[in-house]
Amino acid sequence: MYIIPAIDLRDGKCVRLIQGQYDRQINYRDNPVEQAQEFSTDGAKWLHIVDLDGAKLGRPVNTDTISAIAALGMLNIEVGGGLRDEASIKQLLDIGVKRVIIGTKAVQNFEWFSEMAKKFSGKIVLGLDAKNSKVATHGWTQDSSLTLLEFAADAAKLPLAAIIYTDIAKDGMMSGPNFERTKALVEAVDVPVVASGGVNTVEDIKKLAEFSPEAAIIGRSLYEGTLKLAEAIKAAKR
Image 1 (spheres, helix red, strand yellow):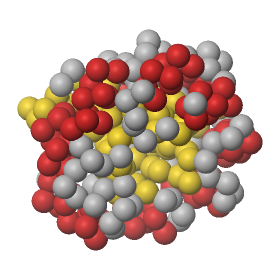
Image 2 (cartoon, one colour; image 1 turned 90 degrees about the vertical axis):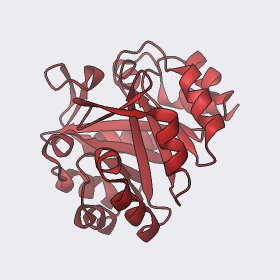
Image 3 (cartoon, rainbow, N blue to C red; image 1 turned 30 degrees about the vertical axis):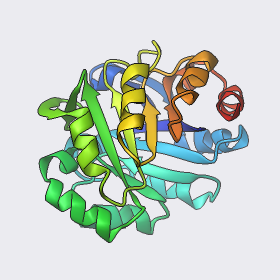
């Protein structure tokens, strides 16, 4: 298992939303490029970026910042937030992003998502955000009737790079990830699973590693100092 630090972008700055709520924002760094450099220095190989403005508007917004981070050539970058057409996917891949994350549009139009997954084979990540067992969309502002495991099983038939699973109840709360559902998802699909939301301690990482997800995304705990990136990476390798 490897560790992917996260940068959530809003108005070009590093922030964090508590449980995905835009009115519960914590501000961290004004310079995301410097933050990306620090993550690289601390041993990260991948970087997870969420364009929060893009998620809300339905199109990429913070592309200048993302492009500047990609231009460093220090990290493999995955980006999500507002990717709902082919042009947006191409735009990000063209500026150096390694893989893109699609959530809302995958749920809304699975036929289109399937087409994109085949056209950009190995470059598309399914972002599965869930409230309890149900998939959520539109930057977590809307629920759907789809169950997490059923939707993941259908999507896993496609040539995806990975499936990122986020438990909204856990995200930004620093209360530990949803171990039970992460384990169930890893066992249900052959596609690499990335765990996201709630990772707070080295013990959380060690427990996640027992289920053999491909990676774990860590955000708020790194910014608030409850977990050091180098320690997290070391724990994930054991």
